[in-house]
Image (cartoon, rainbow, N blue to C red; front, side, top):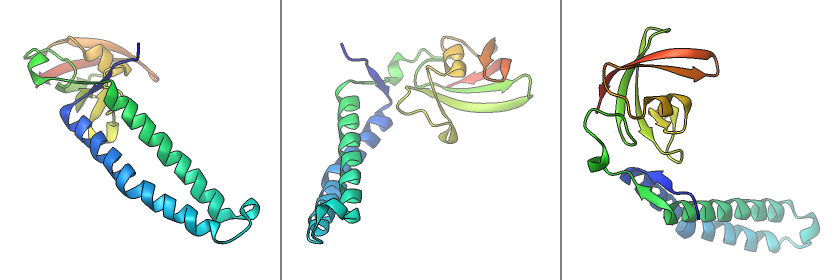
Length: 156
């Protein structure tokens, strides 16, 4: 059985938009580039043709990957989130006690994780350690730099 892909509603919509873009815009563009490159003649030494075929392979691979994720997508429901308890889809304010610094992250599935956007995976050390916890609790987390202590301030 295939593994479920945990997504927020917004994450699923983003994947659907990307898939549509790849199929309706990028795929026809690359097909046209391949057609044009073929007109240059000898394909064995045609760099434009080789580059276009490589790009085509990458696009087709991404399409397959997105289709797979959407096929096995499980949407994280807000109603499934227990009020005040960290779960998938929760936003969490916590203090890294060692750095004395406040962080805010949303806990999401691995597909949507992006630290730059404030989204960490439920499978990451911090995301996993926060799951099931409530505001006021302190957790110890093993991170690459060692063990750190996090105090949860707010769950929403």
